[in-house]
Image (cartoon, rainbow, N blue to C red):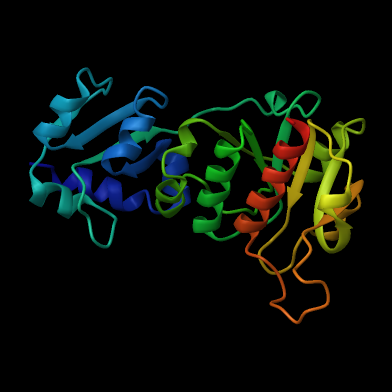
Length: 252
């Protein structure tokens, strides 16, 4: 049976200051935890016996055999139906590896919604983008809702947090693309196989200080041209369209 102290620890990790203090984050779900095991250091894992048996060796500091009631009590999900919950150590990434000289980097400026954050990491993973750089006021990708929304992509993508102006200013020779409603049609632009793609806040877009460092302004045109439509696409949907076009064009 899981102890009350461990349940309190799990609950505390809903708050960023506690995740930072303990250097831990929570992941739940059979596939999600399986994807992350071996990539992130596992502090301890609460799991049903059949799930453990199916995994074979599990590199966790502590394994706790659980029944359905234990997992339900410990879970942060509204309707827990999985067999495993784990606490992993927060990783330490090197921002210097997010170098756009020979790879695409996705930059997120003020993305606040944890679900959008997790989906954007999934988009990056799907299109082979290994590094995502976020402004310091963006949603924490290690928040429980964001972790769940990554669907395991967090195991393949390094997510960094940095002041964007110094980061973008460091790479003055790399193409920096940004998305704007009044930008150039992405389907008519020349695109580079490497560089930086900047996506902005869900409501406000890219902030002026970051916009000043964008050298190529892109937009996704609605269809047909001139038809009345919604104001914009969801940021994660827009990122998927843009990353797809970069890969389609530059890998052809």
